[in-house]
Picture 1 (cartoon, rainbow, N blue to C red):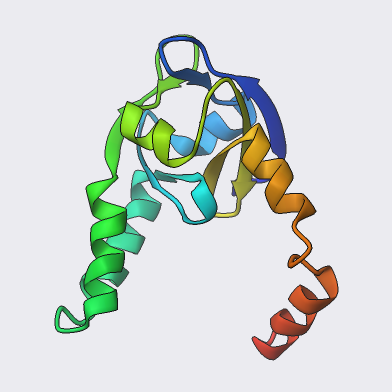
Picture 2: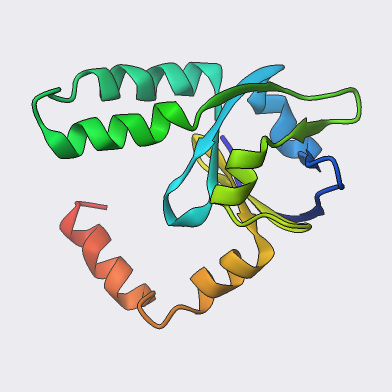
Length: 143
């Protein structure tokens, strides 16, 4: 399980060090794709397969379902860590997440998210993000 928040700096070649606590569960090969909220989602291969199977079940006749599947699969790329524990983030994914230099890496149970520091701070200071509202929604979902 992925948990925690980590600050890292991306080098000029687009390489980002993945925290050692997250590397253990990530595996040697993994998938990086466009995430929601202008971040990147990073999945171990086994979790990617679970998501892939769920997305395959969506009706192809539904326009929103097709768009959602395209969003995840078109932006996806298989990645590996180098010997220093870094991953090279492709340009299209760096652009999607507005990644420049400073990055925030967070563990979100079954995946890792990579955020630009600015986007993460904006997300966390957003006036629409009310923890009371979130708690109410979670209660509605039975959590």
